[in-house]
Length: 487
Image (cartoon, rainbow, N blue to C red; front, side, top):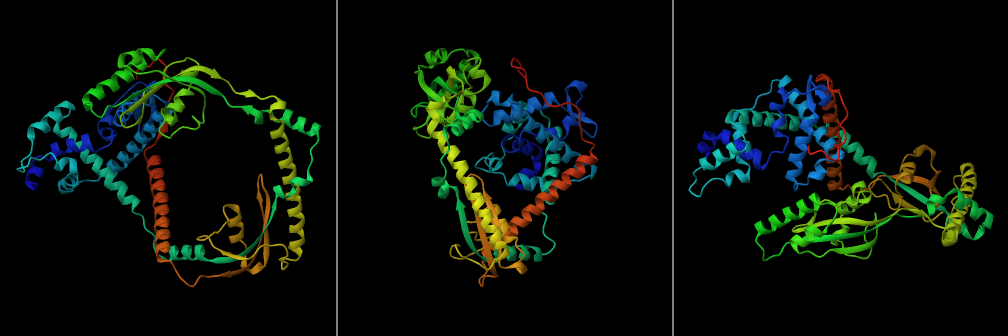
């Protein structure tokens, strides 16, 4: 078998690209020789440009790999992600060439031997299907020399990146120090000053309520919503997969080409047009998660300018295996400020809550000033609990940070932590200890996290160095495609 692999190693590369390698594989070598007018140049790496056409072509290929959604491929956000990927590939390619890295045939063969798709291409008698390889090669417009150079280049990049990513701590001592700090426990007591406990002390006047409404009208705005119609294409389990694939293509093409109505697609494929009123950006309430209009992509499309302003069909979205949906906005209802009489109760609730929170914060500040002078006093505080960063109990965010950062030489000590919208909580800390037992699993997990952070930092520094070395220069920003663009 190994002899067959060696004999056909260049052709084997082709299968690797077709089945495994990302759509960016061919940008390593051939794209270095491209040249376009400067108006189409986006970024230059070592004086060689990445063009808008390259980005658009790569976006199309990547979209085809994940379902063939060409509208997504044309979006600025998707194309920007593609540009970032191409830029990283170019920088890595520059580094590989600059360092004159080599990859041996044995390493190339070994990488191919681990791919199930390649092993599956051998016949039962162990022979290699040369005819199929040649067909694949021809259909992709490649010769063996081009493909071999491209795949070898890609393998160099992969090995190079892996070597950089395998950053390890110089000593396990740092990991142990961090784990010890996370295990250290402190005895804490808390005293909460919550707004809800002061609500009975506030009674806003009608003038105060009206003034708050006038100054914060946007808080009492009804959300925008749409009334829509939609069609759903579902695969029939008894239907041949090829037949459904053809239907799905028709579904996508008709809803896109005749975007001013769902009726042509519905008539052609014998689908019923369904309707839904009052659909907000939050989706449909009271329906199952697999409801066609519960899909985030469908929702995003329905609230796009194309759907709202131009009343065009949304793209055909695959919401589940064998299920495609297209929808269309019938009526758009913009957001509106609700009249005071309709929101009077909510206005009073918000004004009262804010006033009660001010009272709670003021009471906490007064108590804190007293405790600063006499931190040994624990009157009013709850029962003490032991907390650590590994076991924070109910302390999260700033509360845990403040409690764990107190200098142990100042014990007992009190810290005040604001809880916006709620009030203030005082924490009294008076003791520190190390737990008797050590959790080996936690230590190992933390060591791995520290190593991963180190590797990320190392890779970021590595990329920054080679970005500078390659003289990366931004020429033109990536622009949105025009609505009529087919690229």
